[in-house]
Length: 69
Image 1 (cartoon, rainbow, N blue to C red):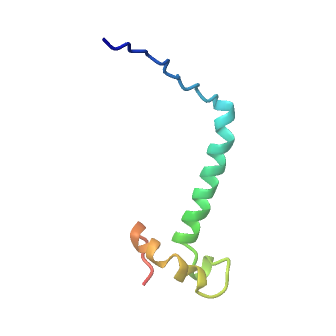
Image 2 (image 1 turned 90 degrees about the horizontal axis):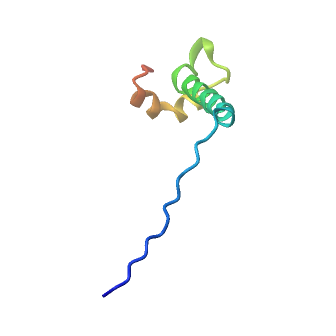
Image 3 (image 1 turned 135 degrees about the vertical axis):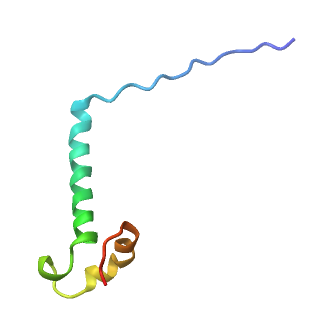
């Protein structure tokens, strides 16, 4: 006969909302900045001169459905 032993299963601790909220806000701001650069960084609302940012995110614009031609 074989002896079987059971190892205790670790239960993950919940993350308090107070610790999660700053990271959620930070992630949301990063997402908004990314959407700005992919969606509107060209033309009259451009923060940077030239087409460098537009060309860098060009394929992402098409993938997300933003018109640019």
